Image 1 (tube, rainbow, N blue to C red):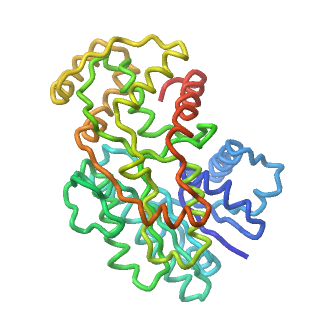
Image 2 (cartoon, one colour):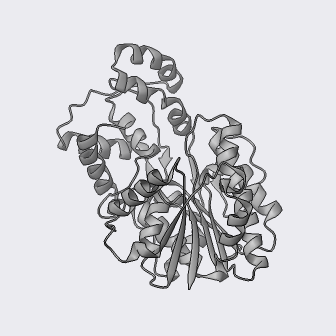
Length: 376
């Protein structure tokens, strides 16, 4: 029997992994979930299962054990005895928990990236000593390429030292820990780009950076004031393909030592003007009144943000507080090589979905949910 230890089970990628991992009738899942008490732990687990149509009466959740812990704490905040028991029975480890906030201090970012990476490696070493460990899959990000121009290769990138934010810097440091301290462990590293909803349905359990970017591109939040977008391209990838790829890699021990770029790549990424056109067209079809766009220099827009916030409501002011990191990404045109990844996954029956197969459903699902629950 597979016994899979998974972090980040209630997150965007992790929750999609749970739904897929449970398809294997021989798999037992131990999910590390952050919660202040057992009642909250159960509530978070049930909410995640309900989202993926796995209600409490379904037989599959009986193969789940939920463990209350915190990735920011050494040893996940578990006692050494409990950590040892879990490690000595876990055949597979998938670590995808992380904070994707872009405004953390470096210490905060390290606590959610570097600290858990060290814990996972030690967890794996314990499992290896017990003779049970078969595979470790770690989720990183293409963001470890930082501000580096050009195309990111499918290899370690220790030469990168300039980053957009502390999230990228800490994830790069965490990768360095893997190469320095993970020798002898069967590790596969996954670098997703900007993860969006499912192909075909657009469903996702959380709305992250991409959706805030789309709100910005609509022009509504900035009264139509928009920086020159040029031909900068945005690399996106649907969550179902990311989860399927990680599940496949976890089940195939020969992928140990590989780095997979789970992204659209230089040829598949979408130019921002085209994305903006699609966003505004979708917004209009859903009854949203849009302002006329007025292009300005990006640096000028950054200076105008406080003024725009003063004229707008509280919801817009909250959204604009996260605009600076988004504008920083718009300033650079980068690419992420994925030739080896696509060859490997295509041969495994997991071809990359084209953006046309998911962009419209992703935007439509977001607008439907926004109408029900308010804009994030």
